[in-house]
Length: 190
Image 1 (cartoon, rainbow, N blue to C red):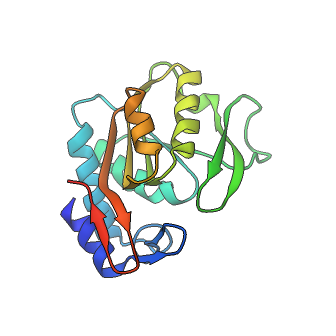
Image 2: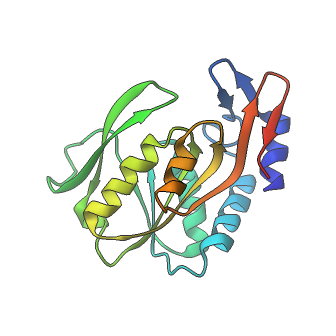
């Protein structure tokens, strides 16, 4: 997606440890016009797949999933990183490791919101090692829902997550795949 690459070039910052900071438009301050274009792109990629639910993980995936869901006219479910008093006892759970935060979380989704009748796409801002995606995929499998595919706005192609998912037969739709990053240059996969 050329618009995304342009936004990364103009506003993205590369930090040591292969961290790409895009918080000025994607995952802290959100450029809603840009995100609407992301939503349109995901709709075009999945419009023939009878998607009836979008799943993401809190917090950065929520905005992406919500705007995309408007194009599909479907609900968004997000996995919570902490169980709260108002969550029913019946939940699906999975352990995920956050690459950015170097922390493990047990994420949960109420069984009420994912059923065998659902056709789900999973969306998130980044795909690096694939831990968050794998946790969400485990939740979809546990629910009996059908996983249509996963989407990452930005995939770090030099890390193993995207290839691991593809090798497992999972459809991966990343809007930009970065093959390498330095302070001065970002190389994309075609």
